[in-house]
Length: 165
Length: 154
Image (tube, rainbow over all chains, first blue to last red; front, side, top):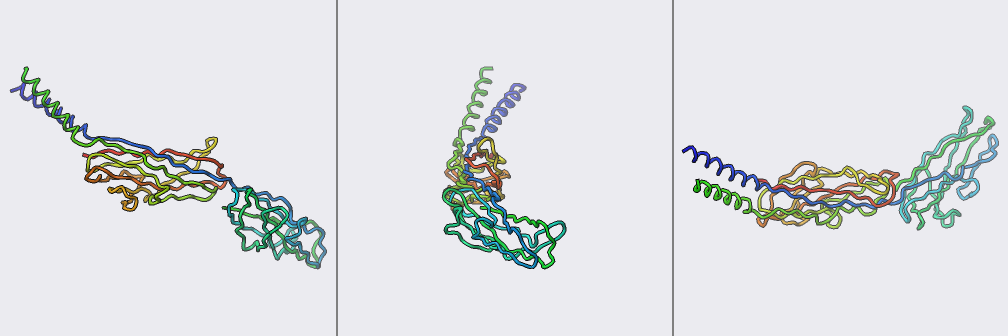
């Protein structure tokens, strides 16, 4: 009787072992792949330069003025559209004195000579494309309006351009 | 004593058929998750219903329930060890008994999921994901490995 009990336990164990072995597992893998394109690089290449300004006399620099308009040089992924947006100061400052800067204008072109350039309003931004070499040039111009009693001095302000794909 | 051993051997043989009665479980990686060209700063989403770019695993085994669980990387690795974050949303995985991308049941790939293989013991898992490149993400090719574990449930 005792040997039958032992035998039953052995049989039960073996059957249970067999059942447990039924829990099959397996796995496989796949790969996620991506090709990241060239990041955008922006350089403030030339200052927007009003030169000498006289009190009470407005002075305008045109966007087509290659010598004095502000210029940003952009590089990135070839032939890819980008979005330009700007932070534009309302005044220039000098030792606590301010001078209004208004009437911003811009041109973007796929070459540094503005051939085929397209005008735009910097306050509205623009969506040009980089050229086949991944380059774009942007010029910014404006007008300063010194008061008749404008204090003498060097006035500056920062124009910030943000470029995203 | 001799009779005892015959009974033990019989029990062992009984155990073997129990193991062998189901089909063997196989899992195969069919298609990679492909993001293609990705622009720095612009997230790229691949949907699990995308027939060209979503990931796909095929499963064969005994008909019935299986438990699916993924092992996910947090990021993809690129040139000089550069990393690009990779994320998986709650609806980024889908299971199809008919192995058709158009008839999936969505599930959260970050949670174990019980799926039922078809009567012929087949099923497919489809997977979407999102690549999140930084604005200054280094250019180049990025890869990561995604593992699907499958366990047959009793």
